[in-house]
Length: 438
Figure 1: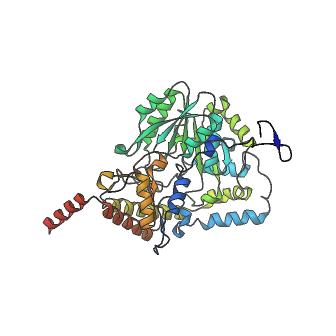
Figure 2 (figure 1 turned 90 degrees about the vertical axis):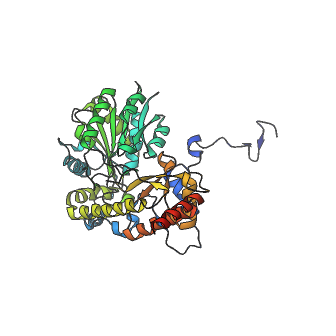
Figure 3 (figure 1 turned 30 degrees about the vertical axis):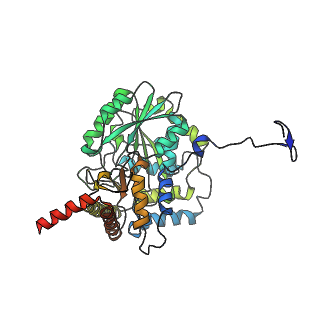
């Protein structure tokens, strides 16, 4: 058949549609893509329980069940029959007011409901932010390691991503010299994640102040991802970036997903912590509203429950959560020190993760972090996240938001795996040292 000729019912040969090039590409570099592949590598014949140390879903473990206040609030909202309707695109007013009050407790000024936009989890807040800041030639500064959704959403919006390092030898502080070197007249914002995913760090007040001053000099805003707010258990307390809103405009992104252990409820927020009104003056606030008018809303009954969830959850619930995380972070750090092929530069002080460096020179038949995690899954039924998924090749992200017994078991299996794959000369050297000690 010649080009242009018709076949079967008058249809041209072939089809006119094709997928987006970005979405048709392999998704293995995403966290979900990599974890899905690793799960498929599990040995079905291993009778031991599978241990998930790769994802950030505390609700998978019974010890991290959400508060009864939150459960009752959702049930009450559903039974009230007041929340079966559509929501305003920016969110229900009582929910916006409750979020403003919740965040204002930690700020030197009061937020208003007009500063708050309710989103479908923090992921939608990221999506909105990238879309609103997009213009021809725009670029955004992202941390390495970081959360890869920022890079993906920037690509979809046509915003160039430029990466600055977090410094492991300085407890994962931002390399501010790199930020200054990367920025130009088309840079629109920089992202910080505090408490840190994937590093488990918590920025000090002094370091946050330096970030704010740097952003001010560059004329850019700060996107503050604070999904893990108040999940801290080290020397640095949580300080919101919005504290420095009078220095530089800040878009604060958050949710109830982690602190309340309900990521599946998909309730987040995008908040202008900007007392001087710079974001309103530059039409960023209008753009956010416009975008949300053409976007999905969080479930209305969850929004209806938010005033009760934020306003009435007691300190005992939060203290229990941070106490468990402190315990499991200690276990994680101490057990990692016993494993020769991995190194942890700093003890985690917040969030639910720690980054550890692979010493590949100590191992046989292990090529990189993905190969390590694939073989670990197959041989030990333990899932870790390869560092390449968060931008740091030949590192590993380990979650400690898990019950202590399972964590001990998982890290014990990790140690056995490393010992089994250790190079022979290192095994011999360790044996000689042990014999001398005896």
